[in-house]
Length: 113
Image 1 (tube, rainbow, N blue to C red):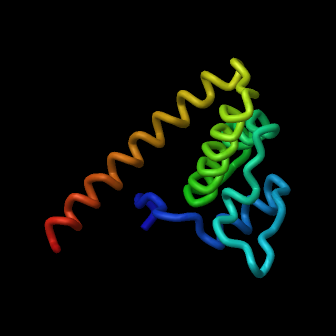
Image 2: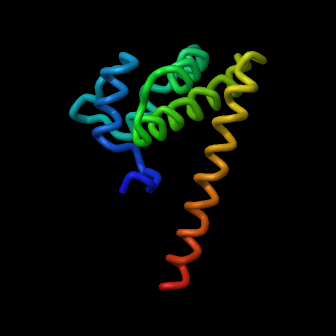
């Protein structure tokens, strides 16, 4: 199980990020928590946490989702900072690898139908 990549944000990952980087806990009506806590003004903080705080794979995956959503908001709001580029490059490379894995799994699944 340790070598498998997460497919979605888990409750365990949320609990870990709430504790480790002080993100707001989901309430009873939360859905897509990673989008609820995204914040374009905190991209730098999220990148710092991704690189410097000890996180497991599930937590890194969840934080990656938050970073992507936050960065997207920053783009839409015109608040992108050049200092994010190198950190985001590394993260986006990891995302591309993950997307490729998901794509291959999807192809295999489609052949089964």
